[in-house]
Each structure stands twice: as structure tokens, then as C-alpha cells.
Length: 156
Image (cartoon, helix red, strand yellow):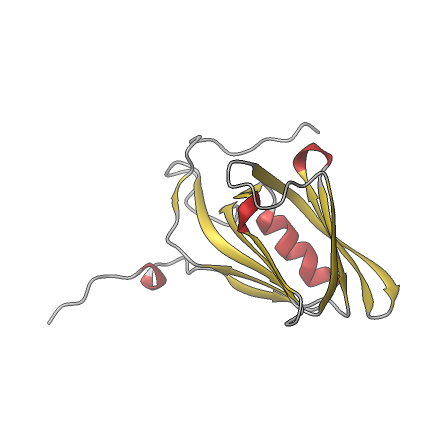
């Protein structure tokens, strides 16, 4: 009996990473830079202390970028120990509004607690008040060719 190949069998496996400190968070921030997601794909579970995004991230880690068009992959970005969520210039629940994530930053207030800021293109931001840094990034689909067939560029 033969079995079809799975995405996980490839040389480049889907990401499943965690961040427990600022250095780890910088790695995840670089991997989610330029991720896009509809405003309707944000969830805060207040009782569980979780905030999650389903985003379409650019596969910056792709070793085959020179051989094929740029790829994106759907990923879940989850934050735990969240005590509060605030936002600026972020429409909530609008499936037609597409947001672009630029970076994740942490400002410690009372160690190990602090504010985790998700900076969005166009001056939007989401601030999570957290007990401690506990973030996971997990790819949940196979990669697909980026609809623009281009990598985002940033002026220096």
C-alpha cells in the first residue's frame, strides 16, 4: 500500500515555535513580519487569557526562494497569559479589512509582566497586557504562492 506524501515529509517542515523571552520574541517577530490577516481573524478568550490571530505569513525562512515564487502559509499566532487587550486604529470583526503585521515588541512593566505590542501598517496597533511572554507560532496549512507573486519591500 502506498501513502501520499505529506507537507510534513518535505525538507522544510512547518514551523511550530514558542517564545518565552524577548530574544525568542524577536525571532517570531521576524517570521511574522508582513503577515496579513482579515480583521475578523482575531480572537480574545478573556477567561482563558489567550489572544490569537490566524494570519497569512510570508515564508521568510524558505530556502527555495530563488527557485520558485514567494510563498505564504496560514499560521496561528497565539499569546497566553493575556490580562487585557487594547487597540488603536484597528477595526474589529470586519472581514473586508485586511491588516498587515509589521512587528512584535515587548515593554516590561513589573517583571515578568508587561505590554506586548503588535504594530500594524498604517499606524494601527494592538497592545496586550501579559503576565509574562508566552507566544506560539504554528503553521497550519501548506505553503501557497503569494497572490502578488512578490516579496514585500521596505525602504531603508
